[in-house]
Length: 103
Image 1 (cartoon, rainbow, N blue to C red):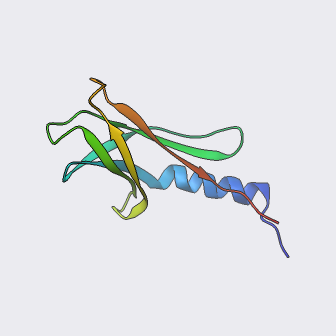
Image 2: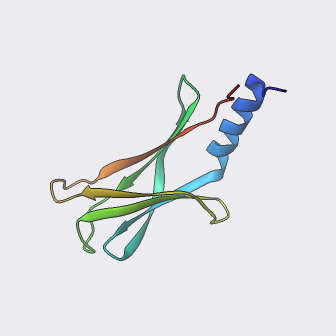
């Protein structure tokens, strides 16, 4: 069985970095588009993508978060339950994507 090289794994990580364009989060029934605050590859090869969820007049509970690529296609989503009543500045939502070869 062939294994991906370190260069191949790094290439996939860099592709993700170049391709993910923005995040969205849902408060009440309203979707809010958010620019990426940070996208990095950490020392362990994990792609870390963060964006800010800010307080909104639509409500206080963030119930879903998503990532989209440059063409507007959905790349990742998950259900969350973040109550923003206790913050005036919002919070950073973080997606961690691990790319590794399993033998």
